[in-house]
Structure formats: C-alpha cells, structure tokens
Length: 491
Image (cartoon, rainbow, N blue to C red):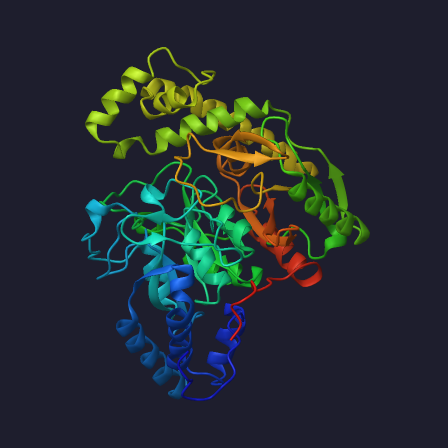
C-alpha cells in the first residue's frame, strides 16, 4: 500500500465518528485519509471487487479543500473531510449510474441524488461507488459490467445484495462510511452477511430522488435509502445528514424523530423471534439469537420469546410480495408487461405459484391496489398496538448466513436450511416484517457461525422509532459485540 505522507497511524477499521473527530482535531488530514483508503483499494480491491466506480481525482480536490478549511478554522459540516463511498445506484455527477444493466453502461449522471448532495454538503469526500446486482434485484452483487463482489469473510460466499458492494467495502476496510438502499432487505442482508451495521429507515424519512437510471420524480412505495457502517454510532451520524423532507415539502415542515424510548439495556422491553414455520431459520442462526436473548436477560432487559402481532405470516408475506412487484411496475417494458398480464389471469394474493403471484403484483388494477393497501394499513395498526407493549422486536435478518455464489435466478434458487432445501424467496418474509408496515429496522452483528461467517440481528422498531432502534444497536455494540474485521485484511 502507499505510504502516508504524515506518517500517522490510521486503523483501517476505525469508525467514521472517530475519524471525523481526528479530522476536526487536525490529527489527520482528509487528503491523507483519502490516500490511505485508495491505497487499500489498490492493495485489496481486486480480492473483493467492491468499489467499482472510482472518482479519485475529484475526491482529492475535495479533500484538499477540506484540509484548507481546517487550517482556516472552518467547518464544512458533520462529515468534514470524511472519505466515503456510495452504492452504484445513486446519481453522482459525472459518474455512471447503471444499476448493473449493460445497456446503461454510458449513463452518466448530470446531477447528484438528493441524499448524495446532502452528504457532500455535510463535508463528505465521496471517492467511489460500490457494486450491485442487475436492477438491484438479488441477494448477491454481480453484473456484466463490473463482475462479482465477494464476501471478505469467505470469497466463495456472497456479500449480499443489492447493497452488497457497500457492506463488502466496509468489512474489508476500503471506505469509512456507506450509503445504500433497501426494499427487500438490500441494506439489511449485506450487513448481516458481512458483519457490519446497517439501518433501514422508516419509509419516507430519507428522500429517494436521484437513485435511478432514468429520471423519475415520484418515490417508490416500500423503498428507502439509508446508511451502512462499521459502528452503530456512524449510522446515526449519517442518518442525521440525509434524513428530512426535500423539495416543496421542505418549505413546509421539518423532521424531528422521537428520542430513543430507553437509554439502558435493563430498561428495554423486547420481543424475540428465533424461527417461523413458513420461513424456517437455520439452527446456527437461531443459536446465536438465543445467546443474545440470554445475554439481554442477564442485563435486566425484559425479553419475551415468540411474541409478534397476531397475523397469518404467509398471508402477510404474500401481500408484501404483491405490493413489492407493484412498486416496481412502472419500469417494466411494454412487451414484458403484456406477458405478465397473461400470466396473471385469474391470480390473486393466495396464488401459490410465485411467478404468477409476481405477475399479479406487477399488473394490479388501481382498484385492486387500493384494496390491498387497506389490508396493509390494517397490519400497520396491528404493529402500532404491538409497540405499545414492546419497545422492539428482535428477529433474524435472513434464514442463513451468507450463501455460496449462485448463477441460479432468485426465483428458482434454493437455500439449505437445517439440511433441507427451501425456496430462496421465502426468506424475504424476514424482510417483509418491517418493509410492508413502513417500520425502521437496524442490523447489528452478534457473532460468527462455526464456519466463520457473520450473523446479525434485525432490530425492528415502531414507525419513526429509528433512534430507538439505533440506540439499542449502540448498546449491543458497546456491551455485546462490536464490528470485528475479517481475517486477512489487516494493515
């Protein structure tokens, strides 16, 4: 790796919060820190293939500007001079935004996404973009343009998707902070697979505009953008920068998320789920969740096993899958839409065939969507009542730790859970719990399997209870398990 001009010690796995403190104190320079991460990418980058779009020269200019500001005694904002990367799907002026589609290889952004503009305005030095699957629609991150990103813990395993490049870059120590997006666990599953922290905000808290290959003003149902990091404290730092209304809404109101409900583990009331008949969880994941539950009980946390709102899990999951497909229907090409219409004839939410169920969701009439949306709001009310009794729900992020790389499409893919093959898409039940009801969910690492693969816990809170989720993740980081670097990536 390249030598540091100031000769300062820079732990590759420091938190962004700590690095910003050092930058503000003049103990390290922004340009120095940037060159350090660039050196790590040049040294380790080909092993992981996470940072696939590199904007080093413009980043150097921004870093130099940040250093000059420090010398003048000026602050550029809460992320002053911090080098970071963002998911490839976000528009960053002058760089390609392809969503992993070869036909968009030369789609160069003419402006920044709203949240990217906010990061830059807070002083961040964005020096690259990280890999995604085509259309952001897989639990792994590979495409024809940029190739395959691997999990730093085990190169034969996926880092997750669609924010898999984000999580892999963080875990390998190639960046200080990341920006991702999530509709079906796309922040949560990479965080879980790579042993980092992630947060899916409450729906609508962070503006989506500018995460696109073609210009759209409307925001997608269910989808959110949010942070990934090596520390839960970093998640809150980044969320404070990117959250809040944009456009006309920003002229009328501002965001004030409620303070955390509790301050110590002994004050929390949590429900915990280990498994589900419909979306079975591997015993290795269940064991680590059980150990977490035991630890929390020893800390004085009120822990109740098996509690959740009283709905039929499969019906809940199917409604999620239908509305998920409906959320992306506007971008379906006409010929493909016509095929979906034919396939969906006679289908409804109870249709067992997943291909027909997906087609039904993609071709809903407006009347049908309104009726299904009413069902969704009834579920949201059930969650509101649940969170009157509990502060949080703890549950699996997904059914297994990171799975081996696969060339089988997600709809036909199987996972091995407790020695049995199960449908890959069924594990999206665990993503649906928070997404369908617009709830926030944080992910914190809780241990490693016997194979040395990370496992995380999903921390689901009440709507707009983002800071309660993040506070709990911070307490776990401080008292139970912090980020642990994967073997082989030390300086």
